[in-house]
Structures are given as C-alpha cells and as structure tokens.
Image (cartoon, rainbow, N blue to C red; front, side):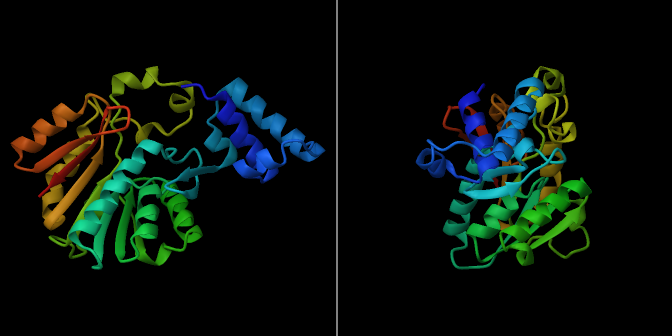
Length: 269
C-alpha cells in the first residue's frame, strides 16, 4: 500500500529531529540548508529506488519503542504487535508476578524479545537467530532499552541453540515470527519488500509453513505445563496450520488481525 504522506512525514521528522507534534507545532518554519539537503536526498532515494523508509532512517517504532533496523533484519510490522500483546496477556493470566521464561525464535531486530523484556519485568528471555549480523542489531536494541541483562542471545537454527542448557520442560512461552511467505510468491512482493528485505527472513518454503513444522516438532520438549507457542502466520494459512496442530494433539486457536485475516496461531501443550 502506498503511503506517500506518511513516508514524507517520517523522513521530515528524521531530518529535523522533531516528532509528529513538533512538526505541526513548527509547521511554519523554514528548513535549514542542511535539513533541506538531507530531506531532499532521502525523498529522492525513496521515490526512485523504493528503498524502505525504515532503512533510510535506520529506525522503526514497534510497541511504542524505537528500534534500530538495517537491511540485515526484517522491518518490524504493526501486525506482529498482536503476537506481543497475546504473549503479555498469557503471561499475566498464567504467571502473574512470577518469573516467566520466554524464547524468541528468529529474533531478527529483537523487536519481540526487547518488547517482552521491557513490558514483563519478571521475564527472562532467550533470543535466537541463524544470522549473526541480525543478532548484533538485536543486542544493540536490547542495550538501548535497558533489557540486555535479561536476554540471552544465541546463534543457530530454530531451537537447536537451547540444546545442552537444561531447559527441557522449563520454557513457558515460545514466540516465533518465522518466514511464512510461499517461495512462489516472493517475486510478486512489493518492491519495498522484495528488493530490500533479507530473503531468508521471508521465504517459508513451498507452502510458507516449512519452518513452523520443524519448530513444532521440537517445541514440546522445551515447554512447561502449561506452556504456549505463538506463531505469526499469513493470510489463508490458518486452516492448514490448525489441521497440523490438531493432528499433533495441541490445543490451539487461530487469531485474526484487525483486517480479519489469519495472523496468529496460539498452541498450548
């Protein structure tokens, strides 16, 4: 979806150091030569190359937190806030005022892990990614928001980094925003996404659910009772993942986003 006014506003805010309120308050002032040059340069890059605004500014807001992003990580989406909000709800309902042990699989920029650590002071987290460069971004975001001491960052594939840590049966919640776009759909993505965001963070295999099947095959070993796994999914994938969960004996629900599309699968061991 094209958002030219919002793009222009975000870039202007970045170049002037003013938030949205500040832009309106100082709407009558002229840009300095330096601000005008920077703004013009970024606007041209956006118009000509479709480079994502978040990569142009190096920042993206998520759950009220400003996060560092770059082309090594997927840009956090508002839709993923549903996963965080559900995680907070489950934590409050099941482990209120208790220490909660959470795993964030495929952490990328650390958006999920940092948000959960920020809003759950009793939580301890393991955040994992197969990309070492992505983990460095996530670590910086944790440091910026003062939660680095409660997050352990591990490099590796899915849950493999947990092997040998003695966490079997102890994890209360696994959060996963893994690649879920079908391989055949990758070439049809908007240029902002397809040309710039890291393909390994997008490609979910032939039906988009390959990584989730692998994750679910090992998740039971680590989850406590009760224990939950939350998985962000794409539109139209709810039925297929629900079938897999049902056949494997999970209790589950499929949650839609504000647009009524499949967005989150929540499974209880």
